[in-house]
Every structure is written in C-alpha cells, then in structure tokens.
Image (tube, rainbow, N blue to C red; front, side, top):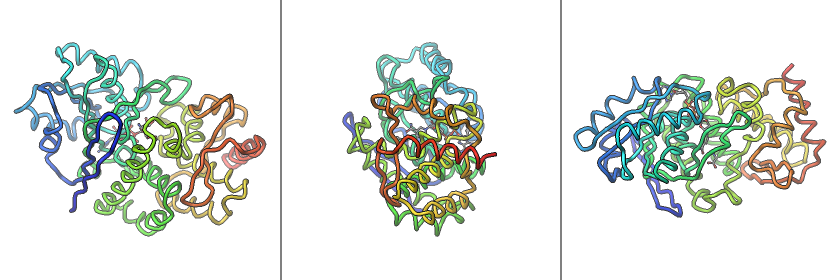
Length: 363
Ligand code: NAD
Ligand code: GLY
C-alpha cells in the first residue's frame, strides 16, 4: 500500500500529514518530538486497541505519560481539559512536553486545546483514528470543547507538529463511525470538486466495505483540499468557512438532541441536505442534483432527514452560530455542485420553509 505525505503551510510553522498503513506509530512520530517528555491523551475505547504499542515504542527515547479520558462527545468539556492539565502537572511536565492525541476528533480537539493553553502553548501531535478525524479535525489547528449552549464554542487555533493517519486503525472503527466520517468526505466534494464527487459515487460502496487503499486515496484528496484552504485562510476570515457546509444545520441537531446522540457526521449529513434544499429554493441547484447528494449520502449509510425540531427553536440555536454577523445568520450554500459560497442573501422565509419542511419530513 502506498503512503502519502502532504504539507500544511501555516503562519506558525509548516507540518506534514503522513497517510500510511500499519506503520510503527512511535517510529513515525518520534522525529517530531522536540523535548524528552510526552503525554499521550486517548480514551477508554481507543486505549486498549492502540495505546500499548505507541507507549512502548516511545518509552526508549522519552518519558511517556498517559491520560485516558472517558469516551464520548459528552465529555468534550472543561472537566476533561482539567484532567489533562492534572496529568501534566502531576508528572511535572515542562514547556518542552509534547502532547499526542490518539483517537478521534473529540480527543484531537481536546488535546489540541490543552496544548494551546498549558503554559501558554506547548507542542502536540495528532494521530487520528477515525475517518472523520483523518480527513478533517486533525488538520488545520481548530481545537476546543463544547459549551452546553453551543458546539465547539470554547477553543483556540493551535497547529500540531505533525499528523499521522494510519489506515491500520480503521478496521476496528464501528460502521456507524465509518459512515459519519464519509459525511465530511462528501462535504469536500460538494463544496470544492465535482470530479471528486463522481469519484466518490464510483467508490463509496467499496470504501464502505473498508477498501483501505481507496480510503487512503480519499483521505489524501480531502487533506489536500483542507491544506489548501488552511494555507489561504488559517483563521477563517473568509474561505475556510466553506468547510462548515451543512454544519450550521448540523450543530442545531447536535445541540438539540444532546451531544453524542446524533454523531457529528450524521448531523452534518442531514444538515448538508437542508443546505442543498435551501440552495435549490434559491434556484442554484436542481431537484435532481439535491437527489444526487441524497443518493450518495444513502450509499454511505447516512441520514438525510434531521430529527423533528421546531422551526423557531432551530432558528434560536442557529443564532449562536460562530458565522452570525450583526445578528444575521450566514450559511454555506451551493451555487452549483462543487462550488460553495458563504451568504446571508436569502429571504428568512426560505430558511424557515426549509426548516419547516424538515420538521414535516421527520414526523
Ligand atoms: P469521536 O472522537 O467521538 O470518535 C468516534 C468514536 O469512535 C468514539 O467512540 C471513539 O472512541 C471511537 N474510535 C476512535 N477511533 C477508533 C478506532 N480506530 N477503532 C475503534 N473505535 C474508535 O468522533 P469523531 O467523529 O472522530 O470526531 C467528532 C468530533 O470532531 C466532534 O467533536 C467535532 O466537533 C469535531 N470536529 C472538529 C473539527 C476541527 O476542525 N477541529 C472538524 C470536524 C469535527
Ligand atoms: N472543520 C472545519 C474547519 O476546520 O475549518
């Protein structure tokens, strides 16, 4: 199996994304550890699967400490961050400690945020073990935790020293999580590249059967898109917001249903359909194109209808979105397949109508 290496260019430093298969993780990450201390942050699902090899592999060269957090989006909280700080303090870690996030996006976002804030900023490395984290959350430096009133509301931009996406971690991933990752993969195609959309239509069935070569190719393409966007707009002053396609609708689902009930990728999938339907109401997409999006999401075994949420409640939740400007909800919509815009130029009634239609479809 081929391995791929890409570079992400950021203001603070450039760093590699290594996409490989059945690697010795410790050997791959060791060159990117500057000091002598390492804290591996993981959770109680991933730890029994992949921690020992990494820990033992690093132990010859570094003092290795471990922080195992409870698994789940509901634990993406300040309390978990405090547990990471406790592990750092209890083990007398200094400024040259490197944190390693071993897990999915929840672990990656929290480890990155702890790294951004401990002693005003220490190094960290991402070893993403879900498709979602490999194609999206581990790349680009968005880190953080949830607030009870909104997803990812507290956080920092803090770039890792490197990202290691090892395909060999994917066979243990629950199928529902594989699907959730595919939602973000489909997102890239819809916002950036209609050719990639065609590629996904041809290869999604095989990827859902865990063809790791094809998944590695998809991870590579997504990371190329993301690296390009991050290099242009690291702090999301403009274009990076396009990566939030489907997310404003999706965050409403996640917040309303309670964190962890709908997986992030599932909420994004249903949210992308809602965004596509608003794009259709604006005359930018045809019904056939919306249906094409739905078919691909279904092929990835993803939901295309959100749960029943009252329209006013949904609008209230949307008003907390980070893209809101001067009280105006701004959304990522599709001008055409493969071409997204951020806009507030839609009649509020059209958004309400899409939300009301979703409510009806869910009942
Ligand atoms: P997750 O981290 O909760 O992982 C999903 C589940 O899979 C968990 O139960 C986890 O323990 C388990 N798991 C992980 N790797 C496994 C493996 N190899 N084998 C078996 N089980 C494994 O969820 P996720 O989908 O990876 O990430 C979602 C999070 O990422 C959300 O909090 C979301 O807000 C965040 N996110 C952040 C960004 C960003 O740019 N920072 C982008 C997208 C999403
Ligand atoms: N996941 C969106 C971003 O990284 O900007």
